[in-house]
Image (cartoon, rainbow, N blue to C red; front, side, top):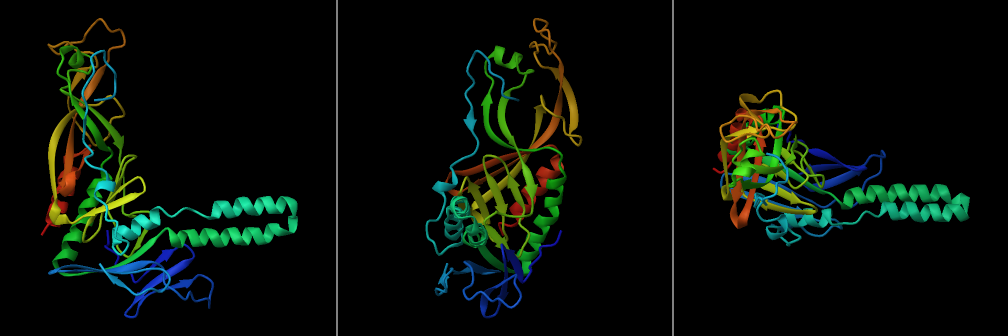
Length: 342
């Protein structure tokens, strides 16, 4: 897929364009020009490093910048998500992360405008049309307030490495099974192993969605490989990795992150991905010799599948663990992220 590098992006009712004079915005209504550009910035990725120049709304000057079954014996689960984004985030409003956090924490105003308009219209019906127009105006305004526009200029080796990440991300998107691993616990007691198909570990995980849309609060001219789960979203920009936990963003440079992958054999009790390689079977309730435990009536065979994990670790206690149904997807992602370290 292409890296894009467009000169304009859509931001709610506005078309935001970059030019040598800076960032400007034009409304969709022909002939209507917006006087102040939306909050945004430029990122220049060079061999000597990354330079970020931010602009803010209001015309101010730029600033430099196994499977969850319970057993009678408790299983100690180890958290695999590391520190949250709040511990890594930058509070400086002049940085990209600071602007993203400002945008993500901005409250929506249009629902209040709609509620007030309906109340007034109930008493005075002719106020319904003005109220509807006011609600639309607040809706558009919320889209501008709750977004950050960033234009990237990328060339040289960084462009080639980021394009390679986009190409390899196609394999990640093609994997029919993908999850974020939230916690993992060792099964140390014989009874625990027997009621979990003879597995050595129990995992808790969320399904993983993959796309190249980037954060909901970011409008940019490049494709952004993105991995989303209910617990965390991770976005790969040309110059950094963005992490979002809830409404808080944080970032890490690629040279502060280590990516690795490893093969895992997984006893699957859920839907079986069509591209996963089956390496064996076991019983849901298994004896230590591998045979079925006949004390359980609804004992069924479970497939043992060949999965692969990708682990990202970074400064400040950051860690994230993903699992994929194919080794090709895991290897491609880990290798492409590792190349961006240089």
